[in-house]
Image (cartoon, rainbow, N blue to C red; front, side, top):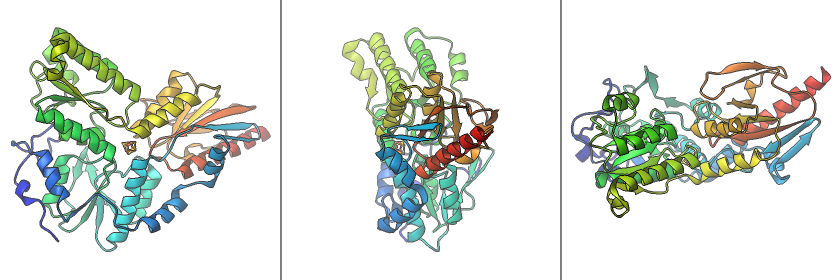
Length: 434
Ligand code: SF4
């Protein structure tokens, strides 16, 4: 086994609010790590893999039998429509597994094949789907324990194989695993890596990265870890607050309280908003990411003048196609009358949540479920309303003929969609029988 990238191993890292940590977490320290150099060195290490291992064909067969669905293929062939009895199912044009997720899951399966005897860990859920994660568990893949919000890496030993999930891992975690002599299988989606590259460019020119995302989402934590200075804004309201601060100044204490967990250590809004670059969590609503980018562009133009814009603002197009396609398909789906919308996806899946938001905006009764089992029977459903905990709703299924819109997030296999549709049909039949 080749020695890890030890020339960088001694370099410690700037702590971030999310990273300030117990011994078990990834290392933090005083000297900023050259993340670009570290990634480049890691790429050349014999212990680092970011492509498959040549077991693609065997894995594709297993994945097809585990995750694909002939019913869904039939519905797709029928213009995304299926009618049975009183129920018409209308499927979104684009939904379910995206390319990056499929690639990550396939790489995880390949890893098991490649390392049949080694201990294999994963730093987080491979994707936000419970059944896919359970399947990995059944293959003996160990999930790193999380205690009080902190990951416990203490069980990982030299020679263990560690998979990084589709939404990536922080550079501190990568460094820890590399220092420990682990074999790293990096399934980070190339679209996420593209955002990291943008952040590297911000950093190189000493710009602050403003990340549109959720500060505690794994992808945003990973993205922020590549920045020197960053600020995470959740939505347009927060972006407008920051824009106003840039233009008019404001209450620094209030600012710091508002973004306490969402900025780099030592961040100073009076100093660090002179030059900004915009980046994004790839699964945020595309329209909002674009609007936030434009807002900051206008803000910097207003403050520094059009001729100086390039000295104060940087932006790259890093919106993932898959996220965009699923959102566009959802907008199209809700154009026609729908009585009920079922959105399937992990409860912590950001892109799924955004699909549900679209239904809510159109005032369509909608239920976000993570698997078919949440449909308890024709009377009751367990689901997660937006920004609330899981709850149970009675009488969720209307009597008489209904049109049910169905979509799913990028981490949801077609099999889960098929099971949900079959459950809806069965419930409706029982309801009709009284
Ligand atoms: S949603 Fe986009 S960024 Fe995320 S894994 Fe899929 S392809 Fe990659």
